Length: 401
Image 1 (spheres, one colour):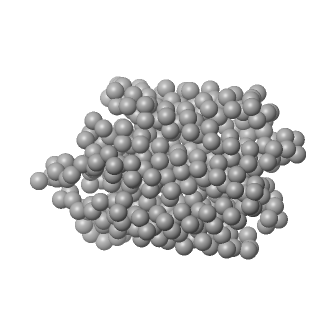
Image 2: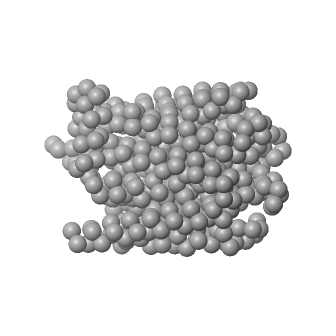
Image 3: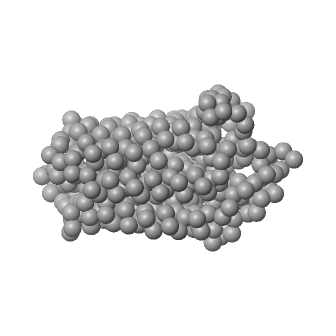
């Protein structure tokens, strides 16, 4: 029996299990995003500059990329369930470290280690893709993406509101409590993942080496990863710069307002599953071109609409409606391939995505510190046009092929 056949022989996930996995993804994803609305408060607390505070989310993203490269390929060899339980437990420990840290270096170190062990949100989609009918791949991938969106939404809104009333440290104490609860519940949320699918043999070094071989063999996946990396760079840059822009003396809003605006991401909870079904019908690459084009329009509106809290709502709604769909459609281009290689393909995709996120984390505060809202907006437009161009080239190359 080959790997693909064996995979289809496994039990499909129930709807309850799909939603349980989406909730798990939401909680463990949120950890990287609590800092977004409170970045100014954290900087003030540790007496560091706006440019320097950007190193915290940047190192978190870089460590996440490194952790995914070194750890995620293990998902093609070992139980995804066991790996998730282990690394979610470690996430809880490092979240506690962030809550307790009284020194900027210790806070940064705890955040960086937290990023390194955050692989559960990326193991789960590969786990689920092996247990859903091919015709529902887009829907289930979109559902798990909604989990990511919901986690980011709760993190940003909750962090802004909690920090405004109780201080930024209370944010991380709440996050630790939620993570501890998920750690205890996770063994029940993930069913046993014993499967007859063929697993790669050989040493750990050979397993990592096979990631590079798969990258060379799947150039289309690399293009999808680059597209999502640039898309994710705009995502991190816009929210970090927006937190600094809105709380600046020029506008004078509180961090709770930044959190409330983050609630606009709720629109994608509604649109992403629908756009996932659309991608199932018209094809992932065509849907990606459409989403990237709409996102570029939204980012172009940031500068003219970005001078009041009400005006900024318009571009943020546009971007949040379609931004996650770029990720969903990118994953669809390779999660339909052979089950035995999906986790390693996901490794490559996510590493490149978070390298883009790290770039955005550095550029967002740094460009804002240098060029203000105008410079940040111009940078975001340039990156978004690159996303549209690459998406269109990928679509036309596939049609010619």
